[in-house]
Image 1: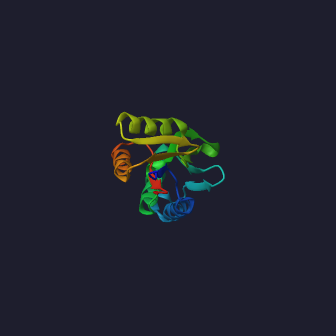
Image 2: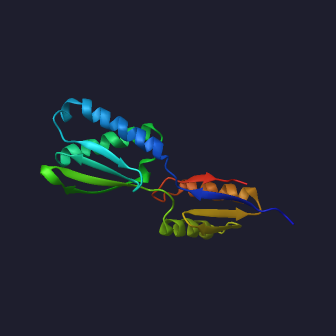
Image 3: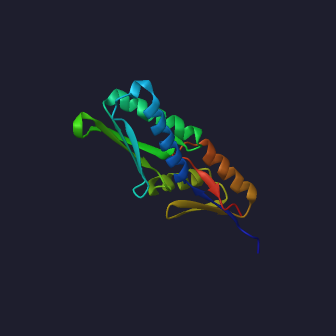
Length: 165
C-alpha cells in the first residue's frame, strides 16, 4: 500500500513578537516630539487577542497605527494578521481603535482554501480541521504544487505550511 503524504495549512501569529512590537512602538511614541503631551498609547490584551490603540485624534491615531505596523513588520509579524477596527470616540476627548489578532484560519477562509485546491483539480484531498486545513495526497509533487498554488493566491491572512510528511 503506498504511503500518503500530507501537510497542514495554518495561520499562527507569534504573540511574543506582537508584544515586543507593541512595546517598541510605545517607546517610540513616548520619545517622539510630535507625540509630546499626547494621550497616545498601545495596550496588548493577550487573552482576548487584541491590541487597544488610544490617541488624541484621528490624525495621531493614523500615526500610531503606522508606527505599530512598522514595528510588527520589522519583527516578522505579518500585518495581514492584524485586523484594525473602526476608530471610535473614547473618554476624555480621545479616540480608540481595537485591532484583533488573527489566530488560526476562520471557517469561511478555510472553505476558500479548500475550494481553490479542488478547482485546480490536483490529486490531493483538502479537509478542514478546526482552525487549520490538512492537505494529503499520494505524490509529494502534487503537494508541492498545492503549496505553490496557495502561496500565489491572497487569502487575506498569512499562511504557514507545517507538518510536511
